[in-house]
Image (cartoon, rainbow over all chains, first blue to last red; front, side, top):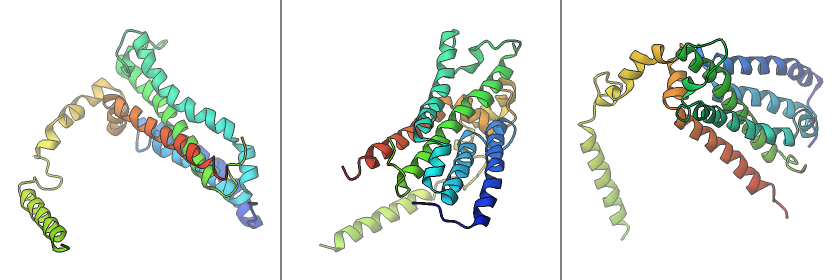
Length: 148
Length: 90
C-alpha cells in the first residue's frame, strides 16, 4: 500500500517526526526527574515511525527502520535490562541490585542506582517497547509483513 | 432452566455488595493497603535511590523484578504477533 497523502501532510510529518523523537528521548531520560519513563517514551518514539509510515507508505517506512534492525532492537532492550541485573550478580550483589555495580568516579550508592535506572533500565525498556509497537504496526499494516 | 443462572448471578452480586460494605473508603489514607510497604517507600526512597520521581524508583528499583517481567511480557507479545501473523497465506 503506497502512501498517497497530500504534500501538506507529508511535509508536516517530515518536519514533526524529529521533534517527536526528541520528545520521546526526553521522556525516557527524564523518567527519574519527573513524569515519564521507558514505557511512555518508547510509545512516543514508535508514534513517530507510525506517523511516517502513514504518510509515506510502508516501503519508505521500512527503509528508515528495517524489520531486521527492529528485531535486533526488540531483543537488545530486554538484554540491556537483564544485563544490568546480571552485572550486579557479577559484582557480588543480588540480581537487579544496581547499587553493587561499581561505576567509575561515582562511589555514592544511591547515585549509582539512579544513574543505572535512568541511563540503563529505562533505556532498555524504551527500546523494547518502541520496537514492539513498531512491530505490531508493521505486521497489521496491509502488505507490511512481506520482507524476510 | 434459564432461571437458575439469573438466580446464581443475583445471589453472587448480592453477596459481593454485602461483603463490600466492610471495605475501606476509596483512597482512604488510613486503609491497611496504604500502609503495608508504601510508608517505607515514601520515607526511604530519597536516601536509598537518588531519583526524584518516586514512581520511577519504585518501578525500576524496589519492584525491579516486576518491571523486568512487564518488559518480557511486551517482548513476548511482539514475538507472538509475528509468529501468528507472518505465516498468513502459506
